Length: 233
Ligand SMILES: N[C@@H](CCC(=O)N[C@@H](CS)C(=O)NCC(=O)O)C(=O)O
Image (cartoon, rainbow, N blue to C red; front, side, top):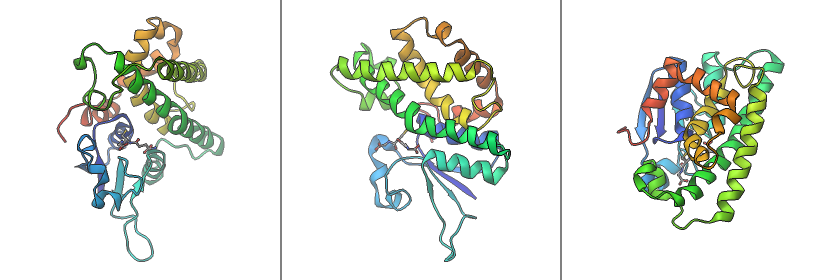
């Protein structure tokens, strides 16, 4: 039995997309980070870093029979890819190509796009323009230095991805966990970055096409909907 401890956010959607794409059965357990439930002792026992998502697989036990909780989305995606035999190539070169882009997402794309959205949301005139999490956590006063720092790095990262997608339909050549890791972050920061540069879809045409291609997949769509902003879980 797979149990996903989570809340509707970009990091969380990486995992619901993978679970839906693999057609795996799973239970969703809500950890309301808008009410700080990630700091409760019962959740901290699963992830000492107090961040969602966490995956529990009751089949994954150590020698003493204790279930090993999995935190960090990169680790969860690799685990599910190995468990299902899908979206992580067995070919050594393709496998490492996928893992390179996966680590690129978790260490670079996610944190920078997340910080951009956090600081840039202070410029939103109407709170209704923001998702519920940003509305609660956003920077209150515009800090132009921080906005520019994270906007520039986000744009640089998008240029890297766009270049990687120029001759490829998918990030690592074939559809993989690297695409599922990047998609929710790009989807969520796209509008905010577009406000600063309306030419975004033209400038990053390969990303735009990749986004459109992925958005048509029933599994990915369902994974996004299961943990859409504001959805009751
Ligand atoms: N590197 C972690 C990041 C997880 C993360 O930042 N989760 C956010 C939600 S997207 C969270 O739990 N935020 C609550 C908090 O920071 O207290 C991963 O990839 O799993």
